[in-house]
Length: 166
Image 1 (cartoon, rainbow, N blue to C red):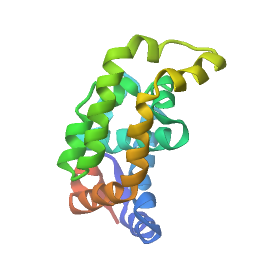
Image 2: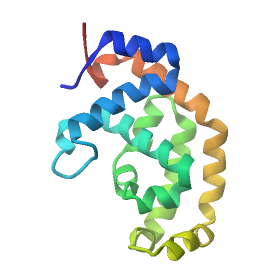
Image 3: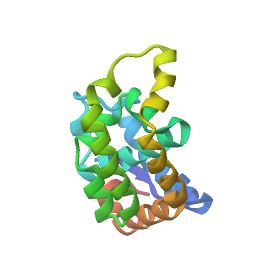
């Protein structure tokens, strides 16, 4: 079980919900040696995977959208697992809807979206997959509220996300 000191959680929570959630996902990444692989997936439980998937989703979409998320190898991790369903259970219904719609695009074009690309091909994918644009805009609009809902869920169910130690 991943352990996090209570004082670190309290200090992060005082800085805001993003920092609060980052304490958990940083601990997960440290446990995983920096990134998720088939070999280390079993080190996290379902709740922890959901929170880590949300971090990857949020970071990647904010930086470069769904195309970047998928090109950086996180498409399967997010779309092939029940991430959308789990986030909905945590209260993030808007993000869940976005993920379900993005999964439809991903599933229909997976081979093309996941293939190795040159910089030019990668840039061209933003034009080829403009259908992601609307989903990204919806996420930007609801991100703060949905992240607050996830943070609240984590706060109310700490034992599912880490063992809190003194």
